[in-house]
Image 1 (cartoon, rainbow, N blue to C red):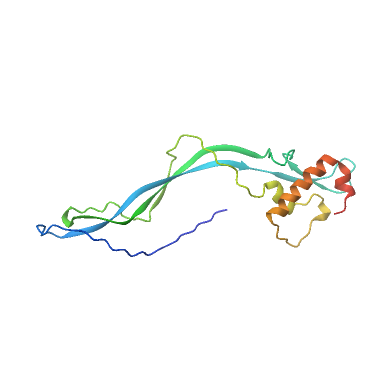
Image 2 (cartoon, rainbow, N blue to C red):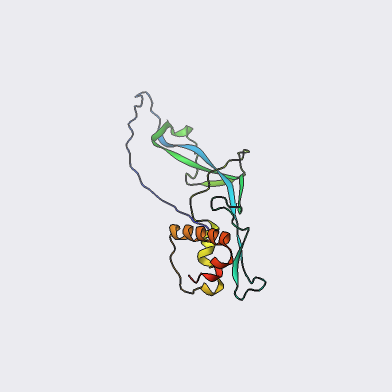
Length: 187
């Protein structure tokens, strides 16, 4: 998934400068910018494989997820990396600032203030963040691929995060209770 947001903002401000009366040459006020950077990291990879399989004597296909969930709070499919991917460079306008200089000495230092460059990573360290509190792939897969093949419905349902988390918790309980909770329960 790729998502981009661009916001343009026009701001007016007034700067008061004092210039010596001895200066007779043309003077220019140049906006001041500062070079800034963000490091982009690959923190986690979250993966899941879902297949519908029949058990040895089973009549109905049942969803099998790999790797299987054992503990609701520990997901074996989340791999922690923390690897630097790239460094994103951009120019930040210093608010309410300008630099006064003689016009004949002026050289353009920032040709395009909206220029963003993506470079090789400048950070060598591995860095980690906490995994966000969002529905896991197991929870999303339960909405997209119900436990029993016959429970698949073509109409779309809007799932809340609470619905998805409850489905996963119910599945963990069903795995611990055995085949009766899967085949004996019609809901």
